[in-house]
Image (cartoon, rainbow, N blue to C red; front, side):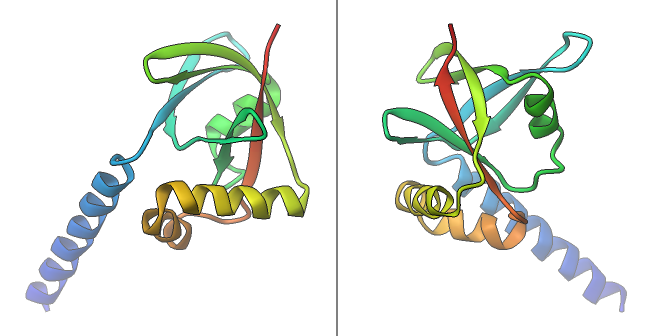
Amino acid sequence: MARLVFWLVVIGMAVGAVTYWAGEQTEVAVLRTLDAEGDTYDTKLWVVDYENDPWVRVANPDRDWYQRLRDNPVVELTRYGETRRYRAEPHDVPEIAAELDAAFRAKYGLVDWWYGVLLRRGSIPVRLAPAP
């Protein structure tokens, strides 16, 4: 029994490592959010461009970074070494969500599907509109 548990742990760790590595092979941006005290938090995530704006997607609306974004929608996104300020606008329009899911699949491929199996529960697309 101990041998079986050992191999299940080893396989689980290997799957996790390969999943992480695969997720880092295409563009990974950094989203900076602020909490109520003004403390900043950086979250690595995927981003796609859709209708001239960057969009991100939260896999689960209970994520801390998404809750901070809801409380304070002014965020910063770092891509290609450049940081810009945005106003985060979550969208719950099914047509937009479907188009964005397709855009994420096109950009991130099979890894997007795999992350969906592992993590995505009621994902919400978030438009990042230029902030004044």
